[in-house]
Length: 284
Image (tube, rainbow, N blue to C red; front, side):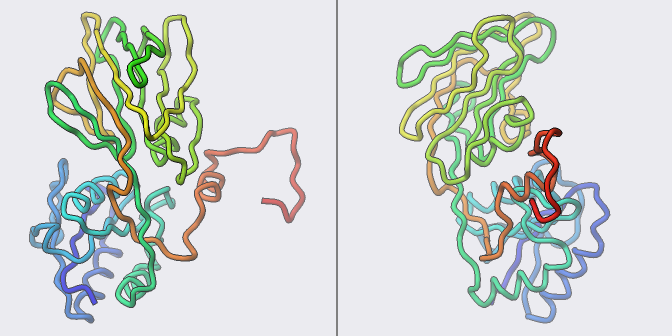
């Protein structure tokens, strides 16, 4: 039975219902609820506490909120549970009305750890960074970004354009998929380099082995470039980055009846069938 629950909440959505449900569950089971401070989170629903003092970190919001919760949880070596307030996402696998059941199952040990890899990024101006979804190098104004990519010391491409995305298997269903790149199944030992729109040249995504090192060298036009990690802008100018994929960095709470990735993406219409195909009533 958890003695202390940490909560991370979406900064803007109306969440009184699920927040109150969490408080009631904690009160019934003699558990304390504290709020975990994360960047950009000014909304207060509980006393501020430390992730390391919690048994479980609960995210109430969407996938963005869950990413912030996972980052807090991984630093403390704690599992994270995502509560979807809106449409179910890739990370927020439990609907709001299922909160009590999910916490009961966690307390009873009726769950399994879903291990997530992450990108470890050595950046000469910012030290080592960690990305659970993706890192993005994107032009910050007029002019192009030039990115030279090397895999295990061998030149792959030199791009001039809007920038590029490097994503984990999890992150391949986010910005990378929206940019028209490949989708990597969650258990694939690989990561993905996706060019953003370029001024000519090769424009193919690259699937990189989990055992390989990706190096990016960045030069910019007069508008400069910015570095984003999991959607958050990093206060540094990206110049040279060395990237590897590390396994089992974070832990999510998963249940035996968790919705598979493809089912989630099809339900959210991120994966669509050809309009020439008319499915039978029983087809999915």
